[in-house]
Length: 221
Image (cartoon, rainbow, N blue to C red; front, side, top):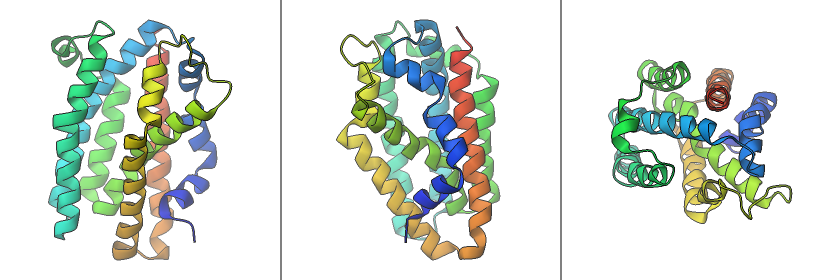
């Protein structure tokens, strides 16, 4: 039987394609995305990561066994002490300082997405929270891998090559696979078949909010 993530993606196939093949993503692939659009995305992604860290802190609180708490603590550490630093360093190459990014207001799309994830975690349990997070965590891995493997993707001379290769890299692919395994574990321990439609609804909405996040960047041009 397919894992939970694969079942959720199949149930939301149209929305998933609109997210993973969004015009923003395809413009990254061929290098045609205007710099202003990418910078807008990078700034908002910095602000998004702050709330992503809060979601992992919430996951630790929602965890009822030590393994879940450890998984959340590791995720929180990875965002705060690793990913944020890497993101800031990467943004410096685009002329964006951390001070400047932190001073930027959140876009409506950033607020809508991050607050949705946190609300699902607050109102529901750990499974609800991870299903809301999955389109981001696993989706970026799928996008990176697909773009890297697509012959139509232009890597030579593409200003966004580093971004593509970051999410196609083995380290990030491994993170996404661990998240899928964790989803299966949570589903087995916390849910039965009757819960699946609600999880599909959460996954679909989070996927749509991901697509809106791309669109926010695209409309900065």
